[in-house]
Image (cartoon, rainbow, N blue to C red):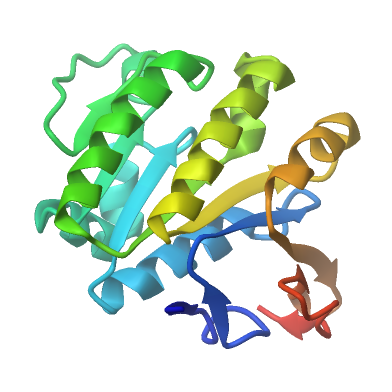
Length: 213
């Protein structure tokens, strides 16, 4: 089994292929930044990267994560932008960059994401996939629809041997309790006097110690 190297960001060295990780914690604990760094780390290793940007536009991803954008331009990445059309801008889809009107258009997100997945599957690209953030989807769509969407794509991640990432605030306890079981393990974040700390729960390893992020 091939594993994904995550030792630069997490208190474990590797994660098995086909794993879905939930990055979860209170607000303002840098969850999105952590998920983004895990994608970028894969890009640096010539892996693919797919992002559902519920809060990040294509322009924002290009600015904050040039490594992810480079993967898209190289044909080993993709973006579903849920922000740009919501702001009223006119956009056109390309093969690997898709736009939907709102983070709540779960069906449209799934359709466009499916095309990107098929492209990368044909290429056999090892890929890291992130929904950043699930919490924003829940502001526009009910938890049942979001659950169905995440369930489908968690299955695809497992089938393809990819690494899946979801970002979720723990402040919405009802949604957290409903969605967390979809994931194989959790990266927990918390605030401390020294800044943000992370630990990994699951992966057959129990709980790691907290480490600074």
